[in-house]
Structures are given as structure tokens and as C-alpha cells.
Length: 488
Image 1 (tube, rainbow, N blue to C red):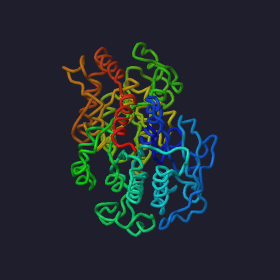
Image 2 (image 1 turned 180 degrees about the vertical axis):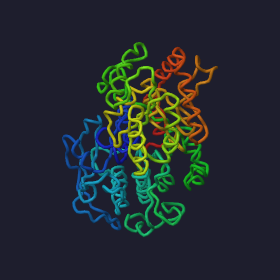
Image 3 (image 1 turned 45 degrees about the vertical axis):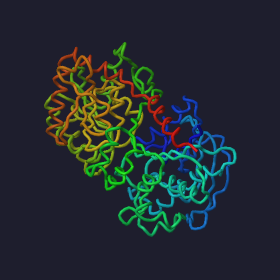
Image 4 (image 1 turned 90 degrees about the vertical axis):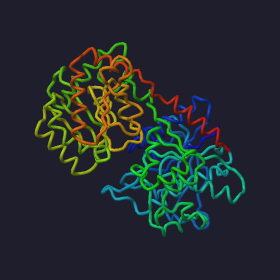
């Protein structure tokens, strides 16, 4: 099948979260199953810099009613070798050549024209399904998150106008909390037929909703874990869209994200001071010692390290970690963190590290290379999220023998099996807790401490964790089954 994946970022060229990892890993996994996959991306500087052998497909001119007012715009086609994928890139400097991030400026203020910047992404996707490139058109359009939410909407409008099925559409929700909502008056700038405004369209509580549009008009809906697919059909995690999702329950499925073995594999990871695998774990000890030295922690092979790689937000439960830190250190743990986010949280973690520099180390920011060393050198990884669509860091922890300590929610519940006395030798892969509280987190780390003091049991659980098969082959097979149902 010919599949067009529509997204706003892709690893390793541009990444703000797990969406980029999925966008980078899924196309090669589908190609391995015999499918022809191309991606469509906005022309951010990092994307254009990575585009090789680029040719101009066509200039882009807005149809009647669609207003972007951003000067020159054209569609390029080439190869993103770093991501190992063929790509269409929208070269529209007035929209995408900006000094801030892809969605917000340097002050974290969302760009005021995001509805146009990402409306253009959706419109071009639908145009490709109608033959914009005379040499290639997709049978399936796979849109990711709110940035691509209008792709199924524009496609539906085109199919209604032409009275024909042009391509199937799949819309994947990576995080329902980020919905792409804008003032209602912006609907008139998008060039969509008037009937697409309203409850049976892109209107969401009086606003223009990109996520809502994708959920309503795509042929099939997916999210990134089975448990999260069930959770978002309820009011607690449905973010106001649970009613719509319940009506589309038959079209909604949860497909777990995978781990890209070419990027995350302790046996071949060139970013580590030493490699290791389940047959020979001797390399993990030097990874730990080097991490302790690098971060200024006390170099002690017997003292366990708990790490975090995360956005610093309350959704990720990081305020619980702040509350639990004194107790965690008292239990005998060292703590190391990489992340950025809420300013008050960044400051609080910095203060904690300054107060106990041999026990607590904090790096604010994003550093992909250091993330590999941090996870490989640690003994456990904490993921105490309030909600978690899938989670990737716990999967990296499993792969690297760094036991996940997670809350039983979303994809965390689907990927980590709790360690109890009667499960150590059979299914356990980490430590799981239920309540969203610092006390519950500390009780979980206390159980992990007890396990760590029994080296044979710790080794058993760690070995099983490393053998878990969360690769992309299974996910690609499940997406393939969906594509077969909807293909044009």
C-alpha cells in the first residue's frame, strides 16, 4: 500500500516529544512489511536542512476561502536520510522559518497563526490524495495528533465534493490533552465548506478544534496504548471528547508504540561508555560508574540510581517526585534527572540538587545523547504520571535493564508488570503503584529498594525486563490491518 504519514516532527531531525520517535520509527517498520511510505512535514528549518535531493513538486496556491497570507509556498519532495524516509516538505518560510520552536516562540507563547500553519499541513495532505503529485498518491492518509487533525477533514470535504472515495484515513491521538483549539472566527480562514462547522464537524464548545475534526472525520481512530484507548472514553481523561469517542468506540483501537532497535539497544549503542546485553551485563557497571562521575554523584556501585527523563509538568507527576525526594534519598537511592518544563519545577529540582550534590543531580534541557547514558547507567526509571497515553521512557528502561517504577495508568499499565513475591520468577518486569501521591510513589521505591537488596531476584526481574518484545514489528502489523480496512 501507499501510505502518507502526516506529522509535525520526526526523529532525529526535530523532536519535542514521543510523537517524533513514532514518526521516525513507523515508516521503516511498514516498509519492512512491503509498503511504500512517505511523510508530509512542515518546512521547519531542521526539516529543510535534512532534506536531500529535493525537487519542487509544485507551487502552492490557496483555494477560494483558504487564506494563509504568508508569501511564497511550495511543495518539495526528497529524502530525509537521517530518518530513512522519503518526504514531502511544505516550504513556506512565512509560516515555518521562525527562531522559536515549532509550535511556540522563545517565550513559550503559541504562535497566533497556528491554525493557518497547521491548516496548510492538513490541506496539502488532502491535495496529495487528489493527485497534487502526478507521480504518486496515497491509498491511506495517516495523520498524527492535532497538528494534522484537519487532514481527514479536508479529505472528507474533497470526497464529498467529488462523490468518490479518494483515500482512507487514520487519525492517531498521541495525547488528547493537546487539542489545537482556536477562536471560532478562524474557521472562515480555512476554506472548508460551511457544513463542516458545528457539532458534526470541527466545532468544539464554541471553538475551532483540530483534534475534534480529526476524531470526527477520520475513517479509523487509534491511540498509543489499549488502556489509554479505554480511559479516554471516560470523563476523567476524555478532555471533553469522551462522548464523541464513545460513539466511535467501534472505530477506536489502542496500538502500543514500540522501541526502535536501531536507536535504543544497549548491545549496539555507540553513545554508551560500554555496551551490554542479557547474555553479558558486565557493561552496565561501567555505565553506572561513569554516570556517577559525570554528574558528581558519589561513586558507589552498591547505591542504586533512580532516573527521570521527562517534561517537567504535573501531568508527568514530577511534583510528586519533588515531595518524595527526601524519602527517596533516605531509602539509599541516588537521583538523576534530565528534563525541562514548568519554571517553578525546574528551580525546585535545581535547589534540591544544590542541597545534596552527591546524591541528587539535575540537568535542565533536552539532550538525546545524555538520555542514553542516563538510562543505561541507572538502576531504575521513575514514571509516576497522572495520565500517560503510552510512555516511551519506561520502554527504554526495560530495554536497558533499568527497572521501571510506574503508576498503573495508560500505556504504563500495558507495558510494566508489577513485582510481587509470587511473580518474581514468572512475569515481573518492574514496580507498579496505583494512587497518584508521593506516599504511593515512596512505597513503590521502598519495594524496589527491598528487591535491590536481593541481588538474585533483582537480576531475574532485570533479565526478564530486557527480554520484553516492545519492537515496532507488532505495531506495524496492527497498523497494516487498519490500512487494509480503509485504503482507497
